[in-house]
Length: 337
Image (tube, rainbow, N blue to C red; front, side):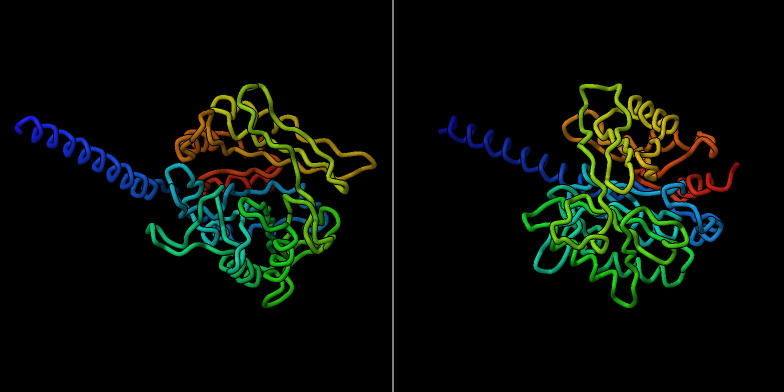
């Protein structure tokens, strides 16, 4: 009898330890991302810095600050999936003008995702899911208040089985509420053409046959290879322009720095028949493990980035955990000879 009681106590102790570890891990996964913050301070002209840009340059010629997985301030499993500490609204105010939205088509609209994980409206695990209509409301309000600015929007279907045609139509609808904010362009527009508008770049085929009204093609082969660490940017013809992208998101910090610098030093060349060229350079990485911790890498890479000279910067620079200081550093490069 005593042996049975002893065995039972051991089993209960083991179960209690397992429950404790699970609860502790869950608490860490929820609480630790709340400590992953950035300085949201705004530069003097952060909300209207584009006013100083000449109208006649193509938007690919602007040194543009952007954020990767822009809607992930609050996201399930934030320890693994959180890529930003500022909301899209806060990023706009800080000076960022390129936004990367990952979406799933649902009966309620376009839900913001990171992989299979839902982005949320708040920090609590039970907070409602974040939908695109809130973000597009922020976009429209900002452009109405700051007509010298334009927004570049990269959209990718991250989850779900609905066709991209639905995404195209919903985005066109949200851009047309309270005014006409969608720039329907068949090639990269000039700054003057883009002011006050949302330039949509679609990371999916134009299944709705919407043409310019559905956004510009913005497609490249996945760069998740972590076996070859000497790779940098790759170019892909988009029809009306040549796109060069460095998105080595499985590199560790040393290899990512090398790829980033190589792309600064060797931006994409003009395409055939005088096509405009666009270079997009991601500083973001998930690291060379199966499951990364974006903040860990961003902290080191962002500190290093702030040591670069403004005049060294070019192209569109996309970051994790973007701060107001980083945005100002990037857009200030437009005004240094």
